[in-house]
Length: 269
Image (cartoon, rainbow, N blue to C red; front, side):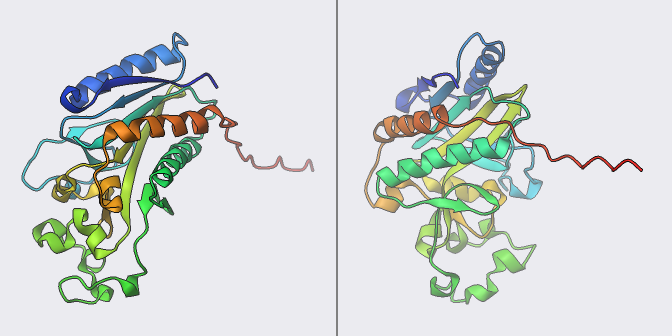
């Protein structure tokens, strides 16, 4: 693998509108496919925006008609904005492409980053991204005075947490001591080159997530590095740590093509 270079598109007062960064992704993607440049990771902080991956259900979008940008990545709906560090690794992978392995490498770099700041995170089976695990269900506080055995988010298909006050809001998952996502991942691979990437919640206003069903997950929530540590952390502090771990994980990965299992040839009769 080539050395991974980082390009800073803008942070804070110079934060970048989403479609502008998306266009830059496409430009860099074309250059990487043509081998005009090496593997490149765009790092950015966005202006507030909701983006929806290809698997997003209509019921997961904002109820008030807030605009959502539909994008060509995997995953579902999420939010980007101030206080969130976003990275777009644009890398050439061997064929046949192993998308899951790429996602796992991104998760590993972000898990290491959180650990360096003192926050223990992990993966959750069937749910991409980086998670802070909650307490066992039986030890969590009751929601609205009800036992979690009757959590309507799980048992009632018609229940919408967004219409039922802050008790069920994704941003309050930490208070409920539930599983909560610190970093989300959604990618696309075109012509063997990756696009899109990860978003790492450093110190955002997490109530932005309360207007959607983040990543389509109804029985968990979101968190940030600052919330978990109980003190303010800035993107400027996190940026070099994320980049260091991305370089270590991605540059030293053994990019072996995914093995394809083939049916054995029938024995000659």
